[in-house]
Length: 175
Image (tube, rainbow, N blue to C red):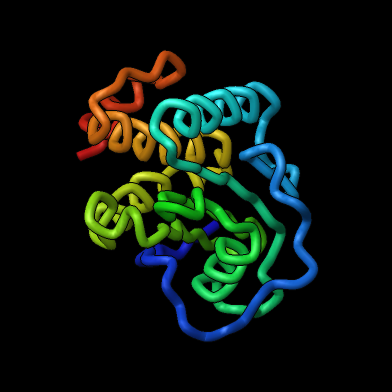
């Protein structure tokens, strides 16, 4: 099983919008039924705390396939149509896995261009790939969500009670 890696800026200008999309609620949407219940709970708790304490939104989504649409276009369309990130500062992140396509994308709002550069987000995505290749979608999504939440919390100078600090050592161990 091979997962492709994508650079992630969330600013595709193709104009394509995925339609129809389910409503975004809660912050994780497992349309591909690929994430274990305990991981869903942890991701939801972490995304909710990030939103509450940092005014940033993280949406975590799995789908079966983009049906031939480039994942960058699909993620950008989903990001824009769902309105990830608060309107006043556009601090939103979408983590998208297309399970059958073996592909992923992390799209960022304009409010995160500096903090979460293409290179930084690509590095986070690259850290997911070993778990994705093993079909460990829950682990990959937890790793990415934790790392993004850690970066956002550090920038805001706050502590997140739901952050899994073991992911920091996992990232160091893999390098």
